[in-house]
Image 1 (cartoon, rainbow, N blue to C red):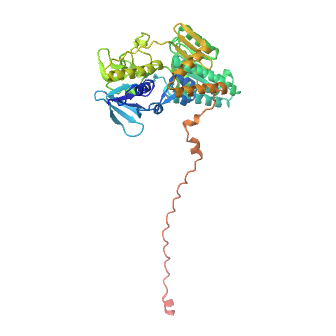
Image 2 (cartoon, one colour):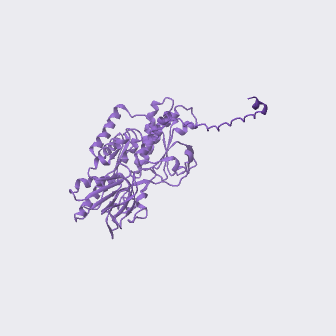
Image 3 (cartoon, one colour):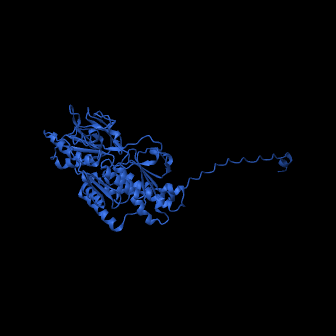
Length: 467
């Protein structure tokens, strides 16, 4: 059987493996997927996870639960040598080793792209993983708890100031959701007022959300301003050392929560360690049929999809002629890649990837959202229902769909939980504090030297004679 190696278990990788299992004939190929995480994260739900609208485990899809016949390796692929058709695997436990393959599918995804701004690497958090979303939620809740014990002043302002960098879809959604969540939290904290909370979004360009029309983006800015959130357009972050924000406009303030959403880049662990062709922006060079290569040359036995790949956008809508890195494309590319790979194995011609987006949806907090489809824009509560309806149905597997829908239903009647579980980041702290420890061994006292006998007094001759 030919051996198929899938590098990465995100959207594209998971859907490729999932569809291969359903479409391959028995014994037609052996599929192996390598990923350091045991699940696929449905990233459009991360803003709702960060505000408690969705339970963290409901926004991920377990590989081993839904992939029945795929060999799953928990680890990283640190090098792909396609000339030898081997991949170097660094497992979660044990020594690195080489794995042979016949066909490689590179779907390693993307990571947050940052710039060398002082303080960002040390103080900011991204929004690409479920762990980051949970951290953001716990940090905001913990800061509310701390601020409620403090008098009005600089320290309380710092704890209740939230900064989001990047005005794309991810940035606007997390910014709006956090603003909505903070407003709702004030009902639980009578010590705090609305004026105590401060929300700033920093965007270097002159507009937000390029996926929607300009009038729609203006409506979003106006709506957020009415809710007490400030958007700084044509503004750059120049420093964030120790949480002290400095902007190119000269403004400055302190914060304890910085969320970075200003772009992504192809996973460098893979694209910088392979002999496969990489284009100028650091992505895998992929044809429209998802085979690695160019129109003139095909790299046999190599395929790519998702955020790690530069897939041509045949609709003409893509930036620079390529598909933008988002979930819509990654999911559809993964499905088509599985079909094309099987077609190629069976001597058939693969199809080219063509997807014209029907629109975009965004959630802006409970009861507020936008839907943009062509020139049609739906705003407010209808846009919010469109956002939840689309992503609720797009979540892979009915098992996951029901968990998300059930959580939404419970929250509608019971409200969102407002418990911070920050202590989970150091789960042994409470145990260690009171755990009994063996007392240090008492060192034995050094043995005393034996005492010397006192010298006997020499008897006089008269005493000896008397005896």
